[in-house]
Image (cartoon, rainbow, N blue to C red):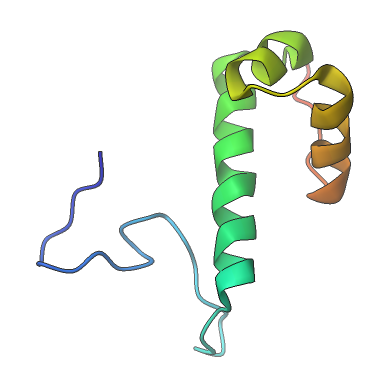
Length: 78
């Protein structure tokens, strides 16, 4: 569920950040930020357990390791 104070949903409401320069993000950049954040939150929920996080996200462990490398996400110590 997404909550917003107004009648429009902003990047802030989605937890996405614009570049410090105020430059607008491309759709690809927004997708990558959202995916990275979702993966990090899932890893945190599963206390860094790769197998259970991958299963929760509906991907194989191998694919999940590729995703972690793509976004340069470090596995939490668990």
